[in-house]
Image (cartoon, rainbow, N blue to C red; front, side):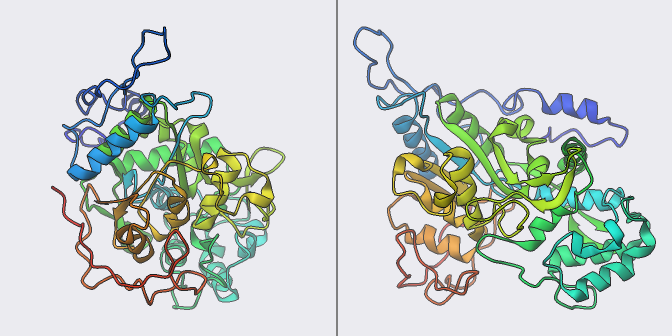
Length: 448
């Protein structure tokens, strides 16, 4: 849930006190639940129990576009516990992206910046930066060595809080994909299954335990959540970095309404696993075992390594697939539907092995959103592939919703659906695999 708006973050506030606040009922600060749904069909003969939604979306919460609210309520009525076809042993699955879908801004970013300001990134073994990612260029490795060799010994914390050059190089490579000397930092920054910079955040957590990383994330959230929207921070000497994370109360209401109506709700994120599952239950009501993020391989002592768990045809330690773009589909098929490895990268022809609902904000959410069988919710951040699909609305199952906090301005020009290409250099296609025949104006960008 969002932090109380009227309570500033007092610096002496302990994480224990904060945890107590976060652990309170996620809707306690947002008013009563929505109206009870209308009576549904009666239950099995002799049961005496009508089938009704336990609740619908609270019409006193937030700034849903009215048609979006109504269509979400229809979904909840149609496939939740009010449906005569509802099977509690095979519940309908809903999958939400995390950053900029459930919350404003990126908790993975916030945690990485917090780690740099608090000296939590460890100097690599042998001061060899290739051990943190096989995809760093020689120029990036040399730049990191020059900047960070004086900041700490192998296996020890880098003193990035007072070695600005080291912090600057790390931030620059992460945020721009380039060294401070403007040289390319990655040999392959983007593929259909990998964003090397996203993966690097998880890889730079190597040497810590999962619980230590969870503590970092909780501390980062505590600092960010109470800052006014638009607050920025400085890391090293890099200014203008986002310093606020705000939970969307509308999405909390949607998640909890779905759960109350029997949906199996999951979070799927390209942030590190232990960053998001540290706060998911307190903030959104989703238990850690329903979070799928970038998952690291652990060593014999249970500490994280710089290698990543694989999915589908990609083995553990190959480090070429994360919960990103088509990798998100792979991890849904692996973790939620328990399909064999050879099937995990493909869209499943059997709709019973696909989510009924998906929500996202980015082009890299597109694969798992296209797979959703009943409804897809796109938060409009002017992402070309996503918005081309949403406005094309191939099966009439797409919803477009402006962001609930600081919605993006209307795109100045039509989205170049007919001429843009994806990360593999291929023309954009809709969920049926068809190329777009028109470009689309940005029509849905203002909150009611």
